[in-house]
Length: 283
Image (cartoon, rainbow, N blue to C red):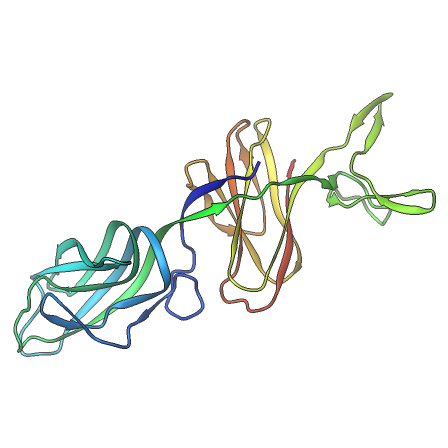
């Protein structure tokens, strides 16, 4: 049953550029923070940010140094303005990894000295995105169980076990079979249905399906692609990603009775229409 949840996940496309939903770019206008002129980083869209991590490199360009000083990590909280959420000492190397909880809806961020170090001290700052964890309010989508059937063997050379759409001729009309019984040792057994979901997109978008296996067993989760590029990611009930990355076809040992979230995402850099079926079946 679909429901609205707060889905917390590591956003996979935390890059520079205009295309990612939560991509970042350097602002075109300077702002003054802690008495210092700086160009903040701006998000393409306001983001409900739980945690952020990025590498910075500061290079002195004036007659003095700005290392071995306190620096602030500041975020622009939507509708509230700039907020200082973390202080760190910039090492002499000028290199530091900012790794902080945020827990605000933000539109931009900046790193600046805690106080103005003086007019003779100037610097440039390079920022490399590493990770951002965001929360989105979304409505999960129900899986279907009558679109595909597992283990139907096509009458072609060789035999393969695949998720297959099955049609039968009834009074001269091909109709989709939604429940198939097979005679096994004189007992009619139902052939396993495949859990599936349909998704069609034209730009970056994410759809989240919920799945609770009935038994602990190996389950294959795959994308039946019609066009374009949809990426799949599997999460447990606490929104921890299962596996190292996205996939298109992978088998996992899932725990019976446990809730899993399956996210299907339109790859951010793909401008073509993407259309696919998500398919899940016990193997």
